[in-house]
Length: 587
Image 1 (tube, rainbow, N blue to C red):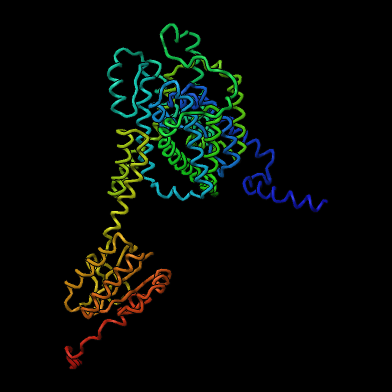
Image 2 (cartoon, rainbow, N blue to C red; image 1 turned 60 degrees about the horizontal axis):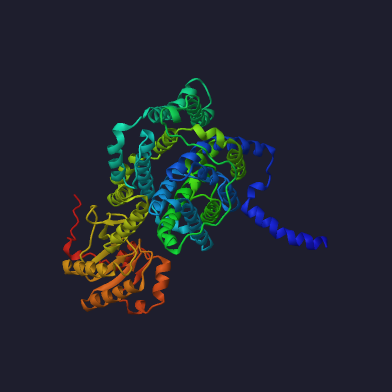
C-alpha cells in the first residue's frame, strides 16, 4: 500500500515542482523578502488601481477588484517570479476606447465581458503553444505604440486636472473639448500634484543618495512617495471639505467588500462589437507583459516560458472578468519595484492580493475625499516615464523602414485611437519586410587579391573574371522573388558576352520553395541554350537535401561546390602564358 501511495503522489509533486520550482528550499528568509516587496508593491498599487479604473471610465473600486483574485490566477499559471499583473495605463485606455461605443449603462458589464474574451483568447493561444506570435511584433512597434498611448493618456487626463468634461479617443477630439472648456476651470490641485509627484520622482532618489542613503533604499523610498502624497491630498481635501466648498471633484464613496462573482452576459451584437478590441488587447497585453518579464528574468539570469505567460495572463483576465473587473496585464513599474525591493517568488503576488483584499474591505472609506485631479496627476507622471521619443529617433536614424513603421504606429495611436496602433504597426512592418524580400540584394562578387574572400564588386576593389561570373544571393528564394532572380540573371548574361559559367553564391539562402525551384529550372534551361553552365556554391546542407528530392540536380549543367573559392579554383581558366615574355632579365 505504501508503494502504491508513493507512486500515485509522485506525478502530482513533479507537476507542482515543474510549475513552482521555487518551492524547493523556500524558507522564512525568502518569505521575509517577499513580504517586504509585497508591502511596497501594494503601497504603489492602491492609488494606481483607483487611477487606472478612472482612466478606463469605470468606478474606482473596479481597479481594486482586478488587483485581488487575478493575481492568484497568474501565480498559479504564469512563469515569471517578478511580474505583477493588474491594471495598467495602456490597457485601461484601450478598455475605455472599446466600451465607449456601447450604451453607458452597459459599460461596466461590457468591460468585464471584454476581460473574459481577452482571457479566453490568451488561454487558447497558450494551449496552442502560440507564444511565438511575439516574434511578429517588433520592438520599434512596441516602443512607438507605448509612446503614442502614453501621450494620448496624458491628454485624456487633462480633463480631471482642469475639472472639466472632455471626451474622445484621439488627440484632436480631446484637445477640442479641452480648449472649449478650459477658461472656466480651477486647476490648482491638479497642477500642484503633478509638480510634486514629478519633482519627487525625478529628484528625491538623487537627493537621498547625496546624503549617503544607499542607492537601492533611496530608489525604493522615492517610489513609495506617491502614496504619501495621495494621503496628504486626501487629508487636505477632507479637512477643508474641498469637494463641497470649492466644487472639487473627488472619488466619493467606494463600496466596501470583496468583488462580486458573476458571468458578464451581453447580447450577441455586443459581443461582436468587443471581439476586435479583445483580440488587440490580448496582443498588447501579451507583448507588453512578456517584454517586461523577459527583461526582469534576464537581470536575474533566469528565463520565462512565453506559452506559460499566455496561460497566466489568460487565466488572470478570465478571473478579472468573472469578478467584475476589466482587462489587465503585467505592470512594468510595479514589476520593477517588486524586483528592486527584493521579491523572490510568486508569493509576492499572493501577498499583494491579500493586502488589496484588506484594502477593499476596510480602507475604502479613507479614499472618499481623494481628489480626481490627484489620481489624474498620478497617471500623467507615470506616463512621463513611458514617453520614449529618443528611441523613435534612433530607430529612424538606423533604419528608414523600421522608422516609418514606428512613426506610423505612433500616429495611428494618436489619430485613430489605441485600438488600431499595434495592428497598424504589425501590418506595416510585415508589409515592408515582404516588400524588401521581393527584390533581394544580389551582387556580382570578386576576390580580394591573394585571399579566399569574395565581396561585392561594386563596393570593394576586387578581382573579377569575365568568363566566370558569380552572383551572390542575399535572401532566401520563394515565390515572391523568384521572378526577380530570373530577371537579374538575364541582365548579367546580357552584360557579359564572354561568360561561360555562372555561379550562384548561396551563403544567405536558407530556403528555396517550389516556385523558386521552377525559376531555377528555367534559368538552367536558358543558360544551357546560351552555352553557359550554371553552378552553385556555399549552399547550406538542408537546402541541398531538399533539392535532392527533385530532379533538378540531374538536369543541372554545372556543379555544386562546397565553397566559392573551390568553385573559382575549378572553373577559372588558366592564364594565357603566351602573352607573357619568356625572357628573364637578370640585371
